[in-house]
Length: 306
Image (cartoon, rainbow, N blue to C red):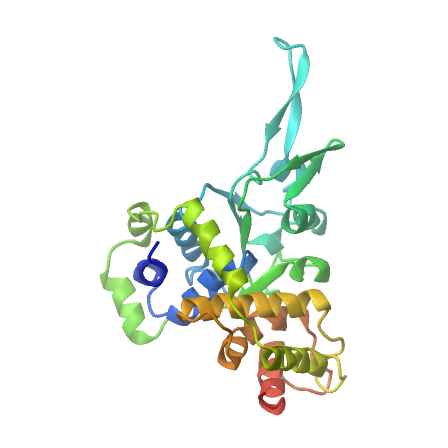
């Protein structure tokens, strides 16, 4: 497999669907190459669902979508056993979670009980239904979209669930040129229907192995530890990053390095993914006067490079 060419082809294809958001598209691809789950947060109508559809199609993966609503039950995700008279037995009917890519659309419109039902699936790649544990397909990704918490009918995601997302990104409004392209171009749903799969599941698995093999030198690991320690100092955030979050940061940086065509992690890779991989796990100190992303960037400026 010609890795650089395949990755460029993948990015180029996604950039034809989500116009003017190449940095965010690269973040999404890095997240899935690193084997992580992705949370896309923004106001309705800026392309969150379109991007999730495009990612699943371009990665060539089996895909299912669930619209999260206030009355969605955990069994609506995992599936149920139904008695079939012909077989004289209960037969399990798998729910939409049994897919390689699950699009959890507007995840924060469901109740906390239903949101929590995803936790086992996201962390263990399995679900337990009626006392029986069932493995999920491999690979298994959750791409969730959520609306800002100040919108009507939304629930805050539990911290334990936010921690399962490798990255949280925001698309934002397009610039004038990108919006003109959207206004004058082809309908996005028609573009999505025509998207070919750039990667096969086997090629994706190979790329994920390459991500794991990307080298992180000792000074680079020192830098990651310095950043994690800074979040725990009490100067910037109420609570610091967990060891799991530090591992996630390094994994995302390795994927970013692979996308840049390198087999080693540079400090630039860590800096490029730091806000997306850590801000949703952190709460700024009360006197900061800025959001978590801005606080992460301020902290980044204060931590010296290796």
